[in-house]
Length: 299
Length: 182
Image (cartoon, rainbow over all chains, first blue to last red; front, side):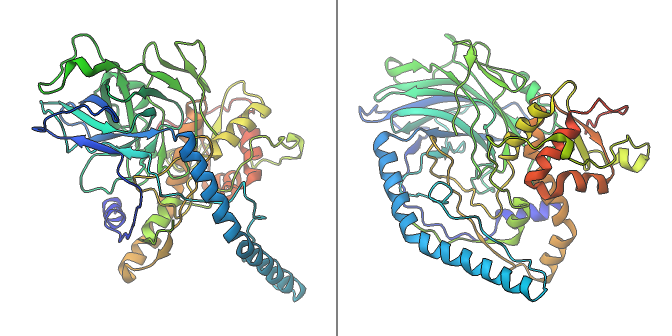
């Protein structure tokens, strides 16, 4: 039954016209690498032992001040356009409720909350700064450990979530790392080496040691899809670098801990498994180990 | 700016109940005004067997005020009905992202609708329980089984008041029962 429903979900008709340019481009095997001075690059190895689910990382580039200014202006414009209609709709619903109550009838209609700019739902699609890495597009392949090289816009990034890696599943925010994760800078003209990415389903205990504390949640944790777990292992001096990657442009990522945030589009929520020396947890606290403080999150 | 999206009613089920916006700064209501259902541990084997479906949260030593804060924060992760979750997407980071919502379309015919009627409730329950559970368990809460009727009273369709009800239940003395592990 669950499988059938999942299939209905996966193959449901979509007609999406995204306007935003694709700002992450996987560089596939056999492609000559030219490091552009106006682009940044991330490099990581995905650890995937036999039998482990294919999980893809989802990254979020923190929008620039200029992008946020455009976003805010667009949101204000949309609010100005929508406000009269929202007010009219609410007034009409309140009127219907009053009429029903005056006639002694029960009223089961919805009364929307008082519209306000602060609570106005606005979706902006001129920039798409949240994107997964398509793990079918590896730069180098090896048993259990493919390497990925991705051209991105320079900026400050958050490892935002994880997605199922199967090509049969429509890319979605299956899991946000809303309860704690890591971030890093990706400067222009540099290949930032993120080290290793590991992901697995969280309902069963993972065979990946780093995921032990965030998996084994049990069958009750599964809605349609199994919840996902993920983490990173920073690059080591002996980490392999595939042929064709210009070593002189590679710098290790300097991870920082990132605290809680909310994304209402997430199907499930999770936290990145603790990263020694960088990210730790203590009860409700998300700890920036390097700073010895609570990690800063957002909204 | 606007996208036209049509998706099956299946996603509506995944999305679960409406998730109201929860203000973290709201002062908790006086716990003396909060009425709890009977949480006496049940010895009914069916209740214990279904503990993975119907349970309440408890944390040893937590105060009502702390529990209220925890539940308020964790309710923010309740799924939003009919939300477009597809990638890529925009996130402003400094503020909560907006959500594009689908108009549900029952385009799977009678068989599909029948399937949905049979299993939709369970999926909806799990989709709502999963994020709240994940959030609370990372804060040290454990689950204890209750009868479905009691669970419904506690959850109350994730109403704002249910935050106080669950917070009060969570801060009671630990029950003489085995926690849920499934």
